[in-house]
Image (cartoon, rainbow, N blue to C red):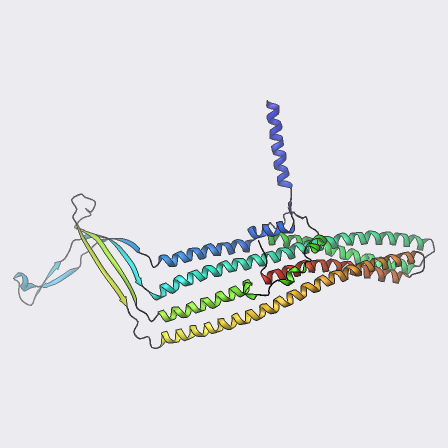
Length: 447
């Protein structure tokens, strides 16, 4: 029994250790889903929505019945003296007698119920709170879209750096082999020293490029972690690869999507801005309306020369009061009129900005579709160019070792191949990111 318990504990400990050491592994969709929950900007946008909900209730509650209470205790260290004409008590006319009114100590406890009956600003405030909540929700959607796009870019940058790293290593392996063979040929007197030097120059350039790519790969992983909301130096593994993601994102169906800019979140945010300016105009107009409120007050007062308010025989005197308050704006020397006109101007500016946003979005959609089509065409072009560059480099390598081609021709073919490889990887990255940009501006993303 003791051995069985030890085995179970060992298995649990091993499982725990394995779970602690296992790095985070993400497909692109996994990374997007994770970021939409854990990215810090997304979290704050969600908090803004909650704050807007509380703001909406705060505004609503300000027009509902309010109850407040107060307890006042007063102790006259030296009571105030009042003077009464002496003739009231049979004294000499023209003289005064000092007297004290009230007790040395007193307590007043009151409760007040107040209710706003009519206030134009309150009605506008209710509408504003609703618009503010809508603005917060749209801001959250925009944040989600931006984070999604950032994750795709960060994921693609990591893959791009990793692919470049692997290709650079393979190119260096091939080049080192060529350099070794060429050096042996030169040492045997069958080749020229320039051939060795040309290959050495190419190898040095590749080695520097490899070191730079290693740094880029490290930075790309850190940027990816930040975008997801993971610790900067935590190990993460990417499951997808550039080629598979490229093929997944090569779909022309999205180009048939309706170019209705009203679906764009940027248009909706600009519309919210117009609505908020309309409400500000209404608010300025309501400042010329009267405000009516009502209240009921009730309380008890106790008086004593000593602090005897906790005694059972202490006398308390009740009182109550009800009333209404009507405030009527009459004359403001043109201040309210100027404020209303300023609000009207702000509304006109917001309308112009909405029109400008609409035009800009139409242009952005058109440009994004064009960029996406170009990215697909470039991918096909760079793929063909890479195949050609590989064949050309292979032919020149064969010719070089057969003594037909010069080392300069080989180096030129190798440089052309390395450039074609980088352009091909970049073209795949562009297909993925341009598709994401088009989805973002069209707001066709489904979470």
